[in-house]
Length: 311
Image 1: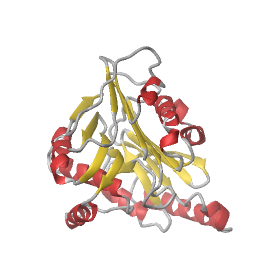
Image 2: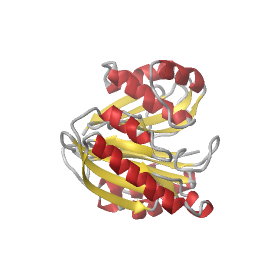
Image 3: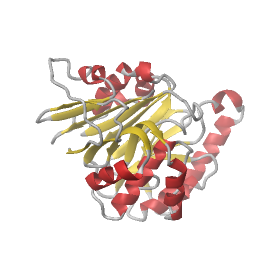
Image 4: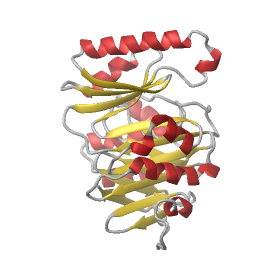
């Protein structure tokens, strides 16, 4: 049992970091192990934000040389970025193992992400014009405060509270999942994909790479593959209903859109609120009411429902 949430504002930037914090904190009972956010700003051409970690949180307690290793890895990141011609505008370190780089770069962004991943111990959590992906152990308030999400202004966001069932309690296994190495695609998912390994092998045959063994990552890679082949987000979501087996409800975000898909059995819950200015959706209505406290009418998307909203 996990909790997922999404919110999108039409035509304006607002405090989506704080909104998603409130939504996910209200869903804490659905998943206490980790919390993740994918938040989206407007972005600009050739300006990117790279979120990466250079160690796991538990390494701080188990590896007495970890701080030295992190500094060495960061130096390698800086060197690699300089070698490929990326200009570093700023670097932030919200935790001892997590870093936020603002970059200017006009080259191959897929190759940049791959080059950084080749550094031992480095994992790129997200890279994009609009997307910033933050995930860590702890509840929504703890993660949000550590990473300063209360100050983030943007147009839309998705988030996840995780109850670990089939993989480890660590940052790598936390959601959302970024579609490595594609810009600005992220997914949160509640459910289980039963043809995960078959679909994963197919995606790998097509040249895609996976960063974890979590079935939810497949949805991000699957979406990125479809969009790369020219499909719309709505096309991809509709195709997933027939091509992906299991019980699932998932939310996808791109730089300009938010999408929802539910499987044939519709066993995983989702509640939706929509107005002219805002769309909010979550596993439980309490999350929507956390950011819209007035009296509202919500709905429950039906089986095989697919919806897409523009920012």
